[in-house]
Image (cartoon, rainbow, N blue to C red; front, side):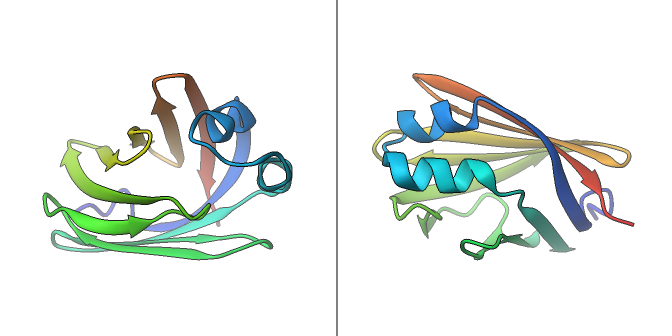
Length: 132
C-alpha cells in the first residue's frame, strides 16, 4: 500500500507553472488566476484505487482512478484527455493523451512531494509539503 502518498499536501514552491499552462493551451486570464493560488492536494489510497483531490479557492477537482486503467479525464482547465496512472516505487506517473499530450509525475521523499508537469514545450516543477 502507498502509505507514503496518502495525506494532505500543501504547495510551497512552484517554477514555470504559467509557461506549462500556456503550452497546454490555457488562456491568459485563467493562467494568471491559477498561478496566483496555492493548491492543497488530498490523496487517499486503497490498494490500487486512488483519489486525488486538488483544492483551491478557484476550483476543486477530484481524480478517482485505478492504477494501470485508462479513463476519461477533464482537467481543471477543461481539457479532455485519456489518462493512465502507473506507480513505480514512490513515483506516480500520470500520462494524459490529448491536445497536447502531457505527463505529470509525483514523487515522494518523506514529507515532500515533487510534482513535475511536462509537455513538449514546457516543464513545471511544484513542491508540496505534508500538512501537519
